[in-house]
Image (cartoon, rainbow, N blue to C red):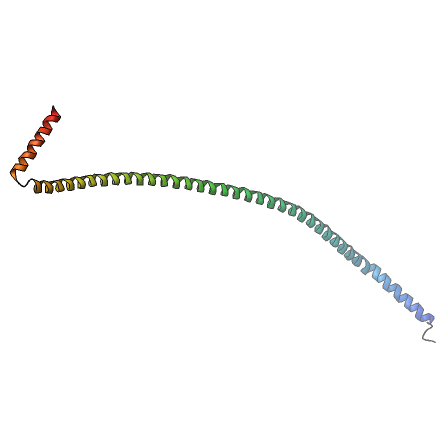
Length: 166
C-alpha cells in the first residue's frame, strides 16, 4: 500500500515542480502559444472571409457569364437569321436570273427556228420551181418535137396574152 499513498515530501516536491512549470509556462510559453493560436484563428477567419468573397464573386461572375451566354446566343440567332435571309435572297436572284436567261435562250431558239424554217421554205420553193421547170421542159420537148406543134403553141400563148391585156 505504500505505493498508493503518497508521501508528504513527495507531494511537496511535486507541487513545487508543478508550480515552477506553470510559472515558466506562464512567463515564457503561454503568451507565444496564445498569440500563435490567435494568429492562426485570425488567419483562418480571414481565409473564411476570403472564401466567402470568392464565392460571392463567383456567383456574380456566373450571373455575368450567363448574361454573356444569353447575349451570345441572341447574336448567333440574329447572325443565322441574316445568313438565312441572304441565302434566300441569293437563291431568289439566281432563280430569277436563270429564268430570264432561259427565256432569252428560248426566244433566240424560236427566232433561229423561224429563220431556219424560212430558209428551208425558200430553198424548198426554189427546188420545187427548178423541178417544175425541168419536168415541164421534158414534157414540152417530147410534145413539141416538131415545128408545127411549136408554132401552134406559140400562137395560142400570144392570143391568150392579148386577151388578158385587152
